[in-house]
Image 1 (cartoon, helix red, strand yellow):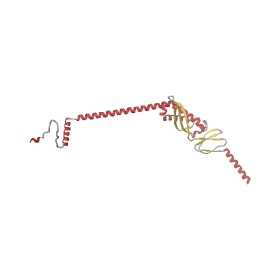
Image 2: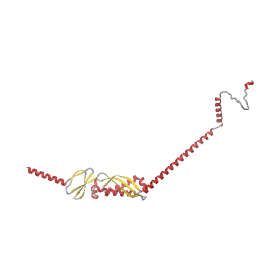
Image 3: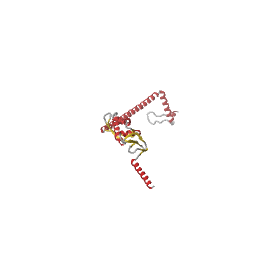
Image 4: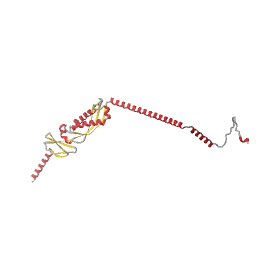
Length: 268
């Protein structure tokens, strides 16, 4: 009885050791896919997230990351007007979960995608897009340039099973000579704009003065036209009435001069 029990325990232990060594179980984590290899040959079927069983010795499973990754790089290129431009870009991407077997077969593990696919694609796309614009247009039409680079990346990376989620231009860097030229042009444009504004202000002020002078002249003309003989007589009568209203009833006394004042009441 005891020998049989020991025998079963030994068999169970050996089986456990064999299972642990051969490891037939594979766990595919969140954001991962499994590429199955049968004696090194890539199979089309891809393992999704969860627990899977593989055939020991015969099958091997390579884990591929399908989560969104961020890559940064730069591309040196010449603009349409032959200015040297360094473009710093950032791209978010992930592997197409349905094509991870092809990616592994053509490129290798996920770590190789960034160096072998993403960076060269970014460099080529930047060169293709910037060559269509002058240096100034790269700045003024930044969104348009960004979209063109993005379209180049989408087309190029789709062939390798890479999906572009987002793309942005971090910065454009130009030569020192070009930066100095841009600064001088900006200063000249600002001075020109200030001169135009000053000229417009002077013109407006002159027009205001002319308008005011014309209004005053028109007012004087209208007043002159309204001054008639009857109006003059009316004003004289009004002045006499105001003088009478102010008179206190006493005649003025003249104390000097050639003509004395004569009181007519004395002759009566």
